[in-house]
Image 1 (tube, helix red, strand yellow):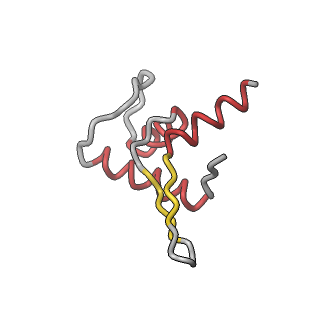
Image 2 (spheres, one colour):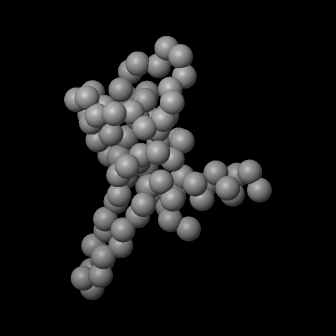
Length: 81
């Protein structure tokens, strides 16, 4: 399973909030009255619609890429099982 550290999560949400505040389209249907870009970014992350990937470089030169959308989908399927 792919895991995201709290630091990665904070960076992903803050980057997405900046994108939204600069006019990027929102990728989920929002609840009524939600207009704050940070809250929208958190909501997108929870819904698994964040279009951001995390790339890691390993000491031996290998690379690892995390797809955030798959990460949240896996967490949701485990929590409902």
